[in-house]
Length: 472
Image 1 (cartoon, helix red, strand yellow):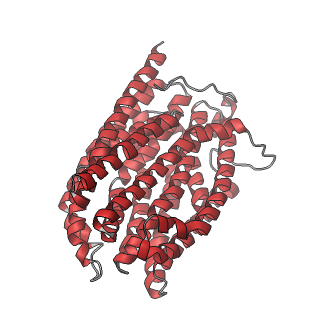
Image 2 (image 1 turned 30 degrees about the horizontal axis):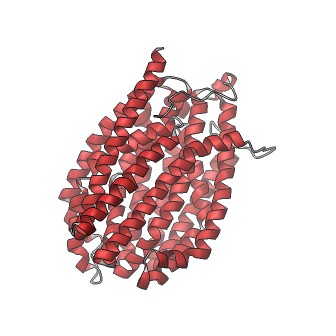
Image 3 (image 1 turned 180 degrees about the vertical axis):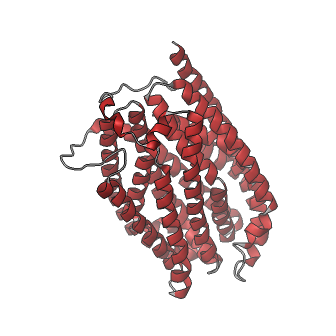
């Protein structure tokens, strides 16, 4: 069981600077229920727009045919590694910065933010080289076969923008940590809208095909980085200020960021591994069409749970600030409250998905080349309706562990969910019992249900131990 004792404040509180506290920081330190709602709102809006652009990518690419969808689908698990590392390091930065803000240690928060940014630049350089140089043998190994050339054409362009993806996510993490989710929303909205506009222009009007979709993605994320750099480095009206003058790397700070960031990144890597495993199972029992259905349909699932992801990001920040301030009762309140509203939202999502399945399916099957995928999409979406209500249990419990600096516990929970439960159940139902693609989908649902319950129970025990410390 994880030791719930909080970290020792190494830099000490800097209460003299409290007159500089921003509105976001005041919200972060206030009523935890209000903080969750107010921080989650802008994040949900921003992530809805991001999800719309991801969905738009798939819809526009669908017009190129099933091969194009499958080619992009084989790059998706690799792209999730990039997204996972950027989001994971961002979670580590948000957690540490928020904890130091909660402890009223402004100087420590700024040092953490600067270290996080430096770390993201180093990681992005390494990833870009690996993915650009070795993409072809990797996607071939994943079973891309006849769509390997399409996957490479799309993936190499996307991965050339690696530095922008990680830098942007780190900037978002800093803003979230200080409760400034509105500007995060504005930046994410600009990126999404620009991508949505560029997609049809570059894919069809310019005749670039899947390469056009990749170029649109890189241009949009690079453009928003310019805006974020202006806010953080030039306008400098954030609570946390970054400065590289006289910067001296401190291994203790890197270790603190990675203590949450690395496990969180590995959680996304696990999702990528899970996606690769599911793709291999599906391509074995049902061919590349099944991969196209799963990878495209999963974009809808990711879109549907965007409100839950928005709440989860706020839970990390609010929990981190409460933990840093040693207000452990607030941690308990955040966990219970977030799960309550999360389950309600998930039930609504599940109902809407079931009712709108024909319309959602039409988004991916509007061309003669993809119309034959309709039955498979209908089966996928109807099965996923059972998935949504159990997502908040595991997701928000992991966020509590991340916010309090216990990233390894969150990793263990997700390791059980993705590999021990989802992949095993998918293989057993899809291959051993011979239920085919639908068996794989039911395996995904069953694995997530069991994994969510394990995470929830673990978090309840952890929070109870924390509140006992509060009472002592």
